[in-house]
Length: 353
Image 1 (cartoon, rainbow, N blue to C red):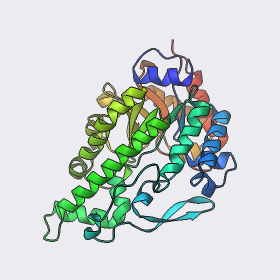
Image 2: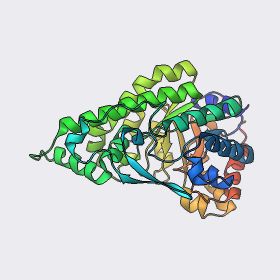
Image 3: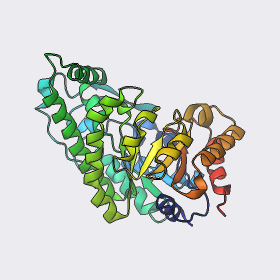
Image 4: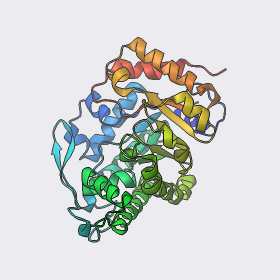
């Protein structure tokens, strides 16, 4: 089996030859290939080159063409500062007060922000690796995107006002913002699929239970994630692509809602009990995870990486399908090459009888 066949078989719960593996590597690929960070996230050819060269080094099943979280929201007017050796930081949100929300205009993925950089990079990687590897592409979730546009603290304050029915709460404005963020994510997802994406993503990490309550997730995040997956589903199906939900943190309290979003694959953070998730929703969706990116992949020994990888495979009953060995979140920039290689080697050597 090649990588494409292996991932497809795992998601469809068909026979696989070994455990599929896809560490969430975006910016790490810039470091490991000697690419300047600022070039990686602003120049499509550099991003594509770094991803291709990293795949040639590691040979993982899934190539993650991604970097930071501001490539879409810059299209709305958010101002970010670029750094030569690190990812961008926000200088000024696009929304300074609730009245500004009504002034926002839907960006064009092919023209605005750094979305065109990502689209071209995916197209380049697809042309080179499209028959070999599975290409996973980014997509900032509606809840998280709204947080970036307003400033995370202010956004959460506005949600708290709504929850507590305060006099100055403006639920209508917040709902409009979430709907607008959902619409651009849908359009960006379509562009990703057209460029060659095999896995389109909704990465909604601000909606983590580390940040909000289960009730807030159900009210302000779940409906918009579901709308995204519902809307993008026919386009993904036409391309033979899959849909992935990524939310950081220990989200055991909302895992059954995650399975109801319409995602085909759910990324399980290292804080969560993979066995519990497998027992609870593993028959509904494919799970990917959940090595600890910092403790194991960055700081751990090769032996610890192997032990943790085998533990994940066992906890997820990986031999039954419906599982991809992955990192619980993004692989750190300076994770040792040998640790990534050991993770992939462990998956490759886990032969399915």
